[in-house]
Image (tube, rainbow, N blue to C red):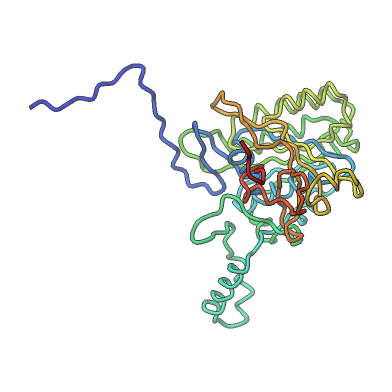
Length: 358
């Protein structure tokens, strides 16, 4: 009896197998997309998984408050935790000193008790050898034998020194650059180590540029040169396994150039400070006294799809949970009982309270 043959058609859909790479810090999404964590769990959920690998992320700063630094610090720390190469450029004389301000991972009570028991059990050795244990610490933190995609960070504690020393961290100052050609060459050299996905991913990197159009830079008044630089960065990142993260004060450039920069961004975010005493906002919003600022999602990257991303909300409040961990919350109007909203990660979006009368 002849065996049955499966009939195929030229119109049958070609199913691509998902990559089998085990690189820490990456998550595979639909349609062959690959995500890189932003370092903030709530932001990853809002964006559908994080930042797309090969995308350009731009943050519009608020000149009145440095809230964009919270996003930048967690973005860089997440890369160092996952042992990913990081390229950092800033308008400061010693940009490497900024690495000491990066936050450390947040350790829960369960993790502390587990580590304490392990130390009492395994570290029964002579005291003179204990100083050598720190040199062999794993650079990638694990929980229950699995590497976490996004860690919680304690903004009050600096990152461990062995994570900075053991990773490929390249720091460049923007002050001494009369033109952007040198920075472009440095970025190109850095991205050449991270070729685009060709079947298996071996590593993923991060580019972080702080206050790109700062007045301290010599190229400050060369707006079209800066526009050309952003175009070059976007093109180079597209053909590499990296994410470029650029912050810039939009109020310091002309409106036409600022619009072009925003158009080039794959993911566009904006931070805004909240006045200390704004009675109108205090009466309208819950938990106003705990807010650090506002985060607006102006644009979300779309890779390998034509379906638009529909967000539950476009503006979120930035808060410090227990004064150390950054969380995002939907803006809720003050209810009668005066209760505060919950984190985006726990609430799952903007939910209205009370029964609906049909």
